[in-house]
Image 1 (cartoon, chains in turn orange, green):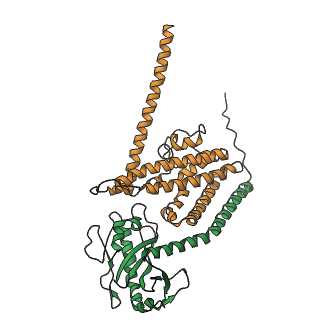
Image 2 (cartoon, one colour):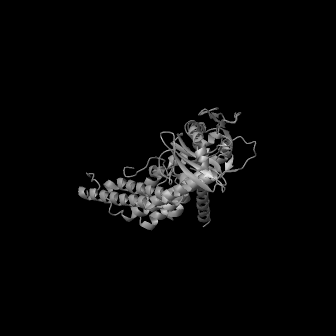
Image 3 (cartoon, one colour):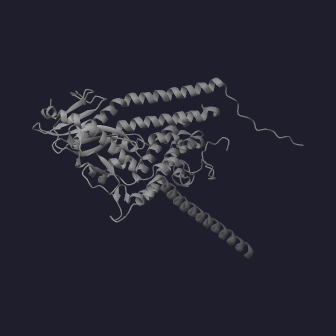
Amino acid sequence: MSDQVSCHTTGAPEITAEGSPFLNGLWKQNPVFVMVLGMCPTLAITNSVRNAVSMGLATTFVMVVSYGLISMIRKLIPKQVRIATYIAILAMAVTVVDFLVKAVSIPIYLALGAYIPLIVSNCLTLERAEAYAGKQPVVKSMLDGLGMGFGFTLALTMLGAVREVLGAGTFLGVHVFSKNFEPWVLFLLPPGGFISLAMWLLFFAAWRERSAKRATERVEAQTGMAGAVEARA
Amino acid sequence: MSTLIPPPAAPQPPGWRMVRLLGTVSLICGILIVGTNLATSARIRHNQEIIMRDSVAELLPGIQKQIIYGVQASGDLKILPGLEEGGQRLFAGYDGSGRLIGIVIESNARGYADLISAMYSYSPEKQAITGFKVVDMRETPGLGDRVRSDPDFLKNFDDLDVRIVDGKPVNPVKVVKHGSKKNVWEIDAISGATISSRAVGKLIGTSVQDVLPVVRKNLERIERGE
């Protein structure tokens, strides 16, 4: 743990460089539901689907750009000053995104402006720089950033959907219930973030347990069959 | 007997190397940040002007010509040549025949997170506010930021009574609890976003008190477009 930068000790399985770095982040090591990282934006801004998608995509962009840069200079960075270097690069990428979004479209900036600075303090971005981009080649690191970013966006959108539908009775601003539906405002407030996150984590824990059980059963069935064959022989 | 052998430590890089790397990274990041800022600032300014122009056009449908006035400390108006920064600005909108349609007034107030900057249109004929638009804010997404988009909340400003008599508003603008609006000078708050709703009330209330008397005093001049 001494070399790891992590603000949560989740007991999540160790992240390896095996498999496709893109798919890894998207689902198997989903930053929110599996690694439980980046909780500040996850809880703070997921009270509507639009916000969740926007924040996810802005984070993805920052991660892809900064991981490319970090990976490019990874062999030059002495271990002792790596965190300061990563932070400087991430902060630069976030500031540049802030200016670019403002220059491209003010309406998008109005929707996103409050969250862009939050990206630099998102512990997911630093964790992946430390665990992956600081050790892996450029393309793989950028793919990891893309996968983790999309995984983050997906998770935020799933949370946002639950909170927006229950808390405001809308999905992407469109009413989904009849006029008699009284919105459950609690879901738009911070406690609603915790409750919906808990529901999703419960779902994923049950799903993981079930697939692990099935895998064990399969192995047992195979060894059982092998044993029977041996006995017959 | 075995002795514990410590794992070989990574060689300690010389101090100057670490300082050099950090310095170089900071320098490059600094250049990139300042470079992007310089490269985008003209574009950002241009975008803000477009937003301002579009907001005025949206608040005053049918506008053909506009004159921007600056309110001076003496309480007089001065025609501004362009969208100059700073000071209280009024955007007077005229139709094709040069008749005054309405006046868009800028105002801001502290919201839950940060300043809320907005514009509202005032109809001198009706002595009422006829529209409201948030230009910039940092309110809580999903809650406070509904002051910009919630159609029920924005309906408050379709015809908000702000009559001025003897340089004072007859009925000060008041924010009331969601669902309890009874009078045309009251603003129905958004449930769950009371602080932001009240901030909008304050934004309009103070502006009505400070700016509208100036507008009434100079109305004939504005109507003539001088």
